[in-house]
Every structure is written in C-alpha cells, then in structure tokens.
Figure: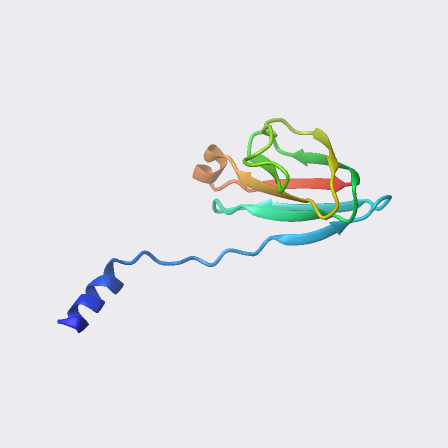
Length: 125
C-alpha cells in the first residue's frame, strides 16, 4: 500500500527545473558596470545589483523592443517598479546602504512563441 502510494505521488509530481541563479554585483560610487546578455526559451536572466552605500544609482537599458521585456524590483519597495516597456530607457534611484535591485530580462510572448532571442545590454553607474 505504501509503495503504491509513493509511486502514485512520484508519477504525478511535476518536474523541478533548475534555473540559473541571479548574477550578483556590488555597485560602488564612480564605477560603471556594463553587461550584455540574452534570453531564450522563456527563461529570465536576473541580475542582483547591491548598492555599497547610500547615494544614487543609475541604470541605462538597451534591447530589442519587439523581442524583450524587463522589470526592476528593489528591497526597499514591495512589488515591481514601473515597467520598462520601451528601449532604450534610463532610470535613476536614491539608494540606502545595502539596498538591492533585481533586474530581470525576458522574451516577450511573441518572441517566445517564434523562438526569437531577446538580446539586451545595460549599464549601472
């Protein structure tokens, strides 16, 4: 009885897909970091940018408007910040010490259905 129940649970369990972890970067004043990447097969590419001290941080985003989407989250606010729906785009924020910004890039629905890559780049200052 126990073995058949275990087999039934294992057979109906959904598979777990391992995702790449976020790429972590610590931002210091006066240093510019530039990144380039791509998203394919519906996967999100996530960057975690941590401010080393209080001040400001500025992001410049570039990507293909037909294939890409992007979102920003921060540890100081719940939910996503206003959507990045057009590239190129620039956003600036006041930061607190240790505040982390999560940037995620992804294919939009049409690009995902057609198997078209979302190529993007951004810089942090």
